[in-house]
Amino acid sequence: MEKSKRSELIAKYTDKPVTRYTQFDGFIDAKEDCVMHPDEDGDVLMAGVTYELMRFDDGVRVLIPDGIEPAAAARSLAKIADWVERSLADMRREDREHREGVSEIPF
Figure: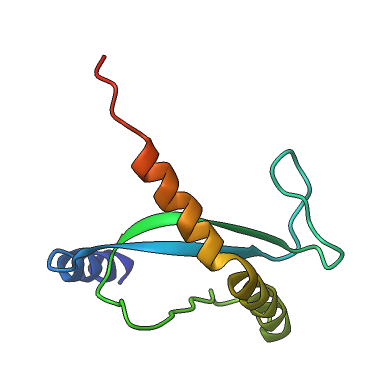
């Protein structure tokens, strides 16, 4: 079944446009390392730009894997919502300024 589902998904994506998104990730019960610095709940939030083959540009989509406890998902989403409200406009502006200021250097 997994192979047929994979084939179905790949076929479905062939006609989807490449769309740019700001992706927010909430890691639950993260282990501390040189990149991950969990908060008091053990959560880590990260964000960045991603390009996906997806036709969804007039809303917000949230993907929660099976196995994540509802309370943990809600806690992470609340933190992401706060971050979006405080920082998304600035993140987009900084990214746009970076992209406009970077020129290609031929080597």
